Image (cartoon, rainbow, N blue to C red; front, side, top):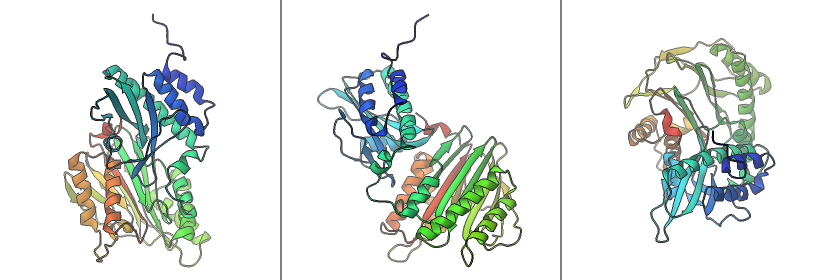
Length: 402
């Protein structure tokens, strides 16, 4: 039997060992050092910014200097968009440059650049994938107790309301062999009252999209209270109408007057496809099936949360394998161009369907969608906009792993 390599010989074991005392400010330097154990002359970590428009290099002692990369206009960005290992075009010096996505589970957090002198074998490329998986996990854990990466990923200050909302969000993307859930929200640096949440518990996916009335801090505080009430009720395994009632009571009790929030609270059975939801004054869910929009069953919306004061009923329908479910706030479809034209439901569904036909993974679909919403409104949203895309048993779940 062959002996296991020592930590000094194996880059993954060595990196894992030193990670226990690895501060965030030394992260880039330590990754560069361990990349050399793979045979790479240069190894550079890039993290995505809050708007998912650029990849920002993590600098450090011994790390070769790098400029930020455009996600839409670089080879590194291509690896990020496609969630696949990508090689730069051959250069005259014979070097091979690999770009490997950094994934926390199935959430894209950046890319890892390797520069090798000469060709790269298939075995070495697989080693870079394994190495990148560990680097991604370590980046997430460093970020949990340091501001280094949060500062790096922003090109301007977040508002206090946006700081609150970003800290409350779940991972932007999650997937299993049966479901993919991905979300997005804008404006990244000024988000106030919009938020989303989800949890996958066994055979059940719990989903929420919420829009608190107002802007800035008042809206963020209302959304925070509503989200806390939602998670408390969800973790108590209450029926959906009771989840809505608890959220309604918290908002009405803590924010007297005319404060309210609209919300879509949903529950998807991942085995049968049964979708149940409560609509609290919110845009209805959209279901995309076989390249077309399917109208959900008729469901009369209840009053917004904080203004209900009476029990509400849940609606339901069954999804089919391959269906895509869209939950969104009105800031998406009501975004207006300078000429006054709404972005609209038709444009929303068309963009998602075209992305599906192009083979874009779900998080890339929403990234492009948000860019389109911003472009439609000349780069400046007049209202918060958030969206969650759920894919149930499409067969493309492995598209999000490398």
